[in-house]
Length: 167
Length: 415
Ligand code: SF4
Image (tube, rainbow over all chains, first blue to last red; front, side, top):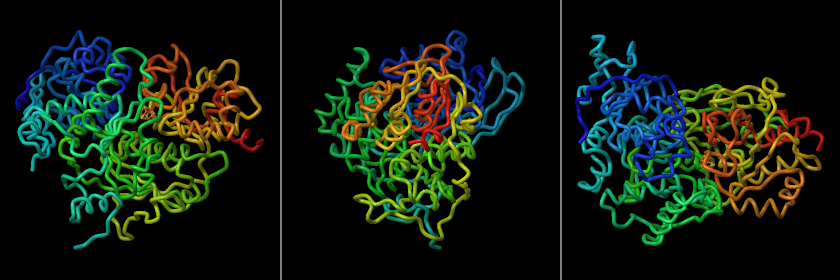
């Protein structure tokens, strides 16, 4: 079950973080999630894996997840313990994939967040709070169907019960 | 109110049986579902997790072994095995290693037809827009949903129209035209949008160039990209799909093809486009012609035209990966394979080859690559310390000959 209230520390990145950077193509051919997690963001930020704590929140600029359709990208982030990704906006396929595998993603026009800040994300209300700096940002609400899929823990769990898409 | 419809609105409306409008979310029946060996194994896993027992229509579920084929190691060989087993169990269409790149095979086999909806677990599924089909890429779990239900959900995208006027210059290819558009739009300029490419400059273009252009719609973030079929005469296209005259576009851009010369994308993003002159002279160690963008017969012909009777520069290696076995056979019959091999090129098995950095020629540290691919992100070809430039097959061949990034036009005119 995805958690509607997420609290964690921020890891801040820039614009156009593409899926080749999130998980290089050469590491995608596996079904082992730990294998994916080991190489997450390795080319961009080799220290990410050791600094991040399960439950942390990735904060990024525009067009997060652009490039390929590999679901291994959100899977690698989730498997490494990332609780949610907040970006100014996402590339279309990444956004769907994240919801489908139960990784919360939210589009929010944030400012002034720095790596290490403590954040609180309310998916239902569509709000991102920076507890460390006493700021907050309203987010674009998820389309209803996507929220339902996310709350079920992803499309596979949803389909297992309902055998069809949310109305 | 009955408004005119763009291509994407028309196709979705026909599938749901009522007129749709941009931004609506709809559940649509799907005509074809395609997975590759990068995404297929995860799709199988997700399908099982959904409690799936039988796919909705095995004749419409295509599984292609192309991204890492033949298998470079035992782990990948076993994932291929998983796909073979699943295809046999379900009766899905299996495309074996060596037959070609998923998008080329889907087109060659005639699966892609105007007006169809094709969902592929590969971002370049937008290639099918060159035939008037709505092709769009999704992830493995979405594909598992299609396997289970024969349907998917979509947000009806808004449409952007791009008109190429003027005439395409000699030595300039579809790749240069789409790079010119990417330079205009930027890497996110068409996010969530459907692109419709049109205009008199495109009318003389063969299907190959149109497929190249539709292929790279995703490089501007588009959900799908159509190239209008005017001037094309191929089977199944007798009744091309056209947008209504009063269709509503969010924006219309115009580009003058007569002013577009050979272009190159600089590292590390496909939209960092400049003219060949701007980077001309940069030594190239590795040149690659292939991929779902530019591995077609016309591309190999262009390369042979530039390299006929000449040699690849001694400081450069040229690899060529035909996009399909059919293309390889045609290139053999035309003598292109011999011309290029004599010039010093090495042929790879039909498939994705080195495009996604898994095998078949990974660049070394500090090397400069010029490739006909569609992405040059850091690490794309398997080494984050290499620099990748993207260009047309003619420009890559000219660069392989010169040993540095070079304009193909002088070689083009000599021949
Ligand atoms: S050739 Fe490259 S871009 Fe095309 S499907 Fe294969 S890996 Fe993807």
